[in-house]
Image 1 (cartoon, one colour):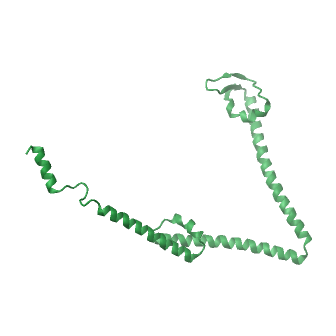
Image 2 (cartoon, one colour; image 1 turned 120 degrees about the horizontal axis):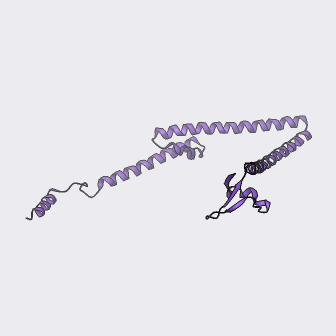
Image 3 (spheres, one colour; image 1 turned 180 degrees about the horizontal axis):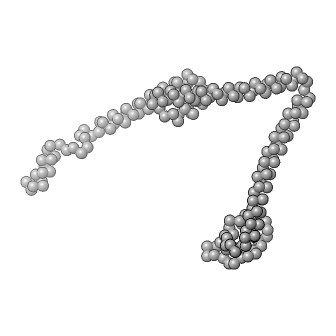
Length: 188
């Protein structure tokens, strides 16, 4: 006999009306302990697998039905058309697909070019995806120039701020401070 925690398979047993065959008792933490034979365990695992497969099959079937319905309506449309209209519709569909492919290729090329420009200017390449959305090479160039200028200004401001400090560098004291400290330490 195998011992097994029921909470793992409660979802599979919800519709059964709560039959508790093989119950031995309850644990202190609220989970029930169930003792099953090898056959009972195999049966429950098979039921759970069948339930999950059925759920997935239903999802696939609905997707397939939707695609089939779309294909039927497209076929009905084509059947009603004359030969010239069919040829025209097919040509429009091919042109639409070609335009999509061309747009994807252009976007990839633009992304690669923008990454190169960003690398040349010392900017992070992660900005490429945002800049590509501008779509125009001139607009992207202006935006990268502006970003580089802004970053340079901010870095220079931070450097100037750190360098201006309080007048004397940290960790160093003036000569008079050291003498007075030494005199106090010696009791003078």
